[in-house]
Amino acid sequence: MEKSDKILLSVLTVVVCVTLVLGQVLKKPSVVVVSSTAPAGEKALGYAEGTHLTTFTAENIEATTELKAVAFTTTGDVRASSLVQTGSAATFTTTSAATAANVCDNPVWLLNHPGMLVATTTLPSTTTLFADCLTTVGDTVNLTLFSQNTASTTVLAAGSGGTLLTSSSTTIAAGKGALLRVIRSASATYTALLVNLPN
Image (cartoon, rainbow, N blue to C red; front, side, top):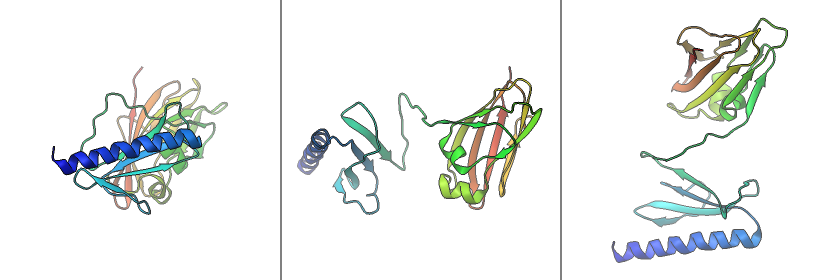
């Protein structure tokens, strides 16, 4: 390791330590963001051949550890020993259109249509979905769908500008589950892949 690299590594260590201390003193969560480019509007400290470190505080992050969150943005491969997808569940109780937030923020969909034999859930349009989370061609969201009512089935339909491909059927049978992957497959369309799960 060259002398300049050692100096930059020392500075990086000091910045992280100061961030943690300030987070404790100010009682504000500390966030360290490491990215290949500095975020817009943020001042960045350069190290390791152009990668940047930016530190800031956020009121709305909750955690019990001193280092409240670490976010990485990279163009290379990322390996993690354990990755947990977070988010709340969305519940559908009648024929309805899913929102972009349902796709982007709710990795679990609970399909429960009391008193209905068949209900249809339509995916969002490209306009709303692309504005929320599928902003770039290749962006992908994975969802798990559960048909909770043993007396009703759900028919899934693509929204405006989207295409739905299935392993067997667009219907999620009563009491069954399915996996849904939504991919921005082109600049103007998305492809939703529905895989019905066997018993």
